[in-house]
Image (cartoon, rainbow, N blue to C red):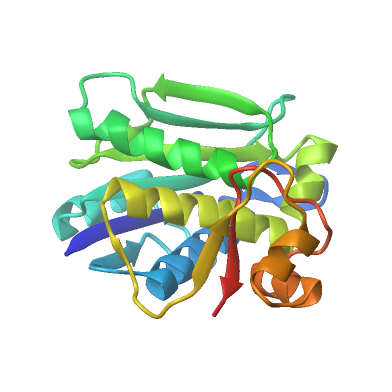
Amino acid sequence: MSKIYLDPGHGGTDSGATGNGLQEKNVTLAIALKVRDILNRDYEGHSIRMSRTSDTAKSLAERTNDANSWGADFFVSIHINAGGGAGYEDYIYNGAVSSNTGAYRDKVHAEIMKQVDFTNRGKKRANFHVLRESAMPAMLTENGFIDNAGDAGKLKSNAYLERIALGHANGIAQALDLNRKSGGDKTYTVKSGDTLWSIAQAHNITVQQLKNLNGLTDDIIYPGQVLIVSS
């Protein structure tokens, strides 16, 4: 049984970064809850613990102490960036790490980039507390810039948050080699040249049903994106 620790950044009196009518603490919690729900819906062989499931304050030490005492196998801290840039990036500790740490991060990074059209700012390393003090492989994701109007517009879309969460969930599942539930949702990976119409026709559903299954509000899809085609 793999133990997954999800850490929505900030919370309570700590709003995190702010911009364009958004607070980081709210967006990170929304993404983390969706990651939890997708993992529980689509995969088996795991348990999930979260540093918070509501708008509460938790110190950095409380988060890593909780994960360490629980014996988590993978720590994923979810954040939103700020500071004048744009796009997605993620981090592992810049000191000594296990070989699994880099391998796990690579899988999550790849799956997130399949789902989103954020600029890919790459895979980085830093001396963040949650990466340094966690006793298990750990990574921190930065999902767009809250002070960038383009990124913030995406973060205001529930459907886009679903895409971010699906990338996290599928990456975590690959990293920990989780089994997809039998009889669960069937998926299709978008290929170059595909359209919603062609995918819907191939799976005997309507375009609107396809959009509803995936929380899509427009007709834009991307090669490598994983779509639910029946449930």
